[in-house]
Image (cartoon, rainbow, N blue to C red; front, side, top):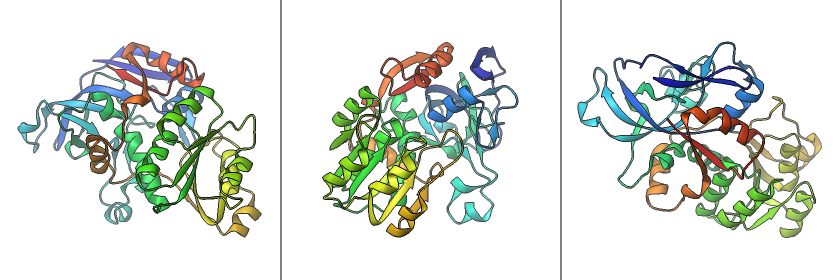
Length: 343
């Protein structure tokens, strides 16, 4: 099979690899669509995310949908041909965190495309059958791939315990930030304000989910949002940019007693707040670690047309253009919001 393999920083090669064989409880998948995630771009640009370092060639990619080609032992053959969305996390299922319902915090989790585990920028893959969620008729493979980032957005909003009528700020209008804004709206948020330095993303956010959009490079988004809320601040701020300044800005735009949810992955693996702001406001700060138990809800939200994923998909490229997709996203070129790869 063909696979896009990252060897070193900015060095992706299309190689031939053996087609994997499903084991007990697993299925062989024909990969249909793979979303390119910001974490993929981190590995491509820097070769690492924090302590997770690319030390040998690896296939990246984890946001995906696929068709079940062959069931392994103990898997019903009736699933053959089914289009599924796939949870890329394989937790151990035995540790205390897994047993308590937090598989996303499992220390022994295997996650597609995270060193040293190969991902799915490839023609075929093997995954546990329990990780595969059948998609209803009418679902496209591209929509199925975007259920992973939608799941992260769902989990982020769940951590905030958002209430009807709350006001929300989202810092960063990448795919995750946009989906957080959309989920917040259908969860009852009275207003969603988004900050984003890129003009094309601001334009998209204003059409997609935002009640107000601000350019942090030309004006103070903190002052603007505080003015819109009568100086009080929003109830919840979601940091979805992973930038140096956005965690502190999140704390500044939230009202006293409010919540800050950190979803973005900081580029330099550091996170800082002005301690006096967080302490004097008595803020609750929570950090998002991927997601847990979100796929069934994500499927229903799209199936019932509460969330529309299609507008996010701005580019669709073949497997041989994974490197092009990485360069496009890292340079913010060609108006890219979400790029999907079709192996």
